[in-house]
Each structure stands twice: as structure tokens, then as C-alpha cells.
Image (cartoon, rainbow, N blue to C red; front, side, top):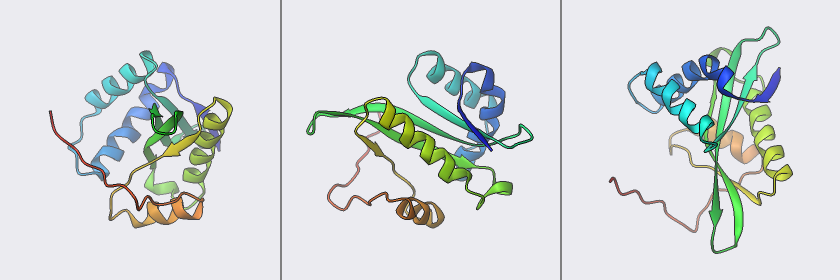
Length: 147
């Protein structure tokens, strides 16, 4: 297993996984829009993506992080927004390796916290996050307002 920060040369490996990730959250497939979205994030330096490849070189998972801030605590933080592992290699530690890469990146680049959200019915994800030491926020609600 190899985990590396993705760049534009990895778009064709990441885009299909990203499309499957979105389908997991009930979005319609659209590989072209997925590729365009990722290309913009990478080109503009708006996200950090780590890609997991098998020993044979097949892309099997990714995580995408967005830099942001906490003005209350006066810190920089990363939002671990996307995490996906191909269903054929789940339960083999890929997600943990990706989360470890995110943690190492945050630690080595001055970020003070990682934050994530997940669907309330994503029980396997929740179990993994809690096993890895993530703490569920019980003090704040998340609200959204479409624009």
C-alpha cells in the first residue's frame, strides 16, 4: 500500500473513486464533473488530496482535506471532508492509512485540528473514527443554508 499526496497527474485515478464516493451519498454519477471539480481544487491549491494505491498500483481510496480556520481558538485547521475506500479492499486498513496521512500532514504543516462530518447512518465510518480517537461533537449543531 502506498499513500501519497495527489496532483494533476492523478486525476484519472481519483475521479472514479470520487464519483463512487458521491454516489454513496445518493448523488447521480458524473465522472466529468468530478474530474473538473478535483482539477479546480488541486490547481487552485484549495484542497489537499491523499491517494491510496495498492502494491499493484491500482487506486483504492482517497481523502480530501480543506484548510480553514477557527476564529474562536485562533488556529488553522483542516476539514477532512471526503474519505472513500473501494468496497473491494475495505477492512484492510486503507482508511486508517489515509487518516494517518491526513494527521501527519496537519501536524507537519502547523494545523492544530482535524474536523470531519459524516452521515448519521454511516455506522462503519463512525466506528472507525471513534476507534482512531476522534471525538463526536456534542456541543454544536451544524446548519446549512442553500444559496
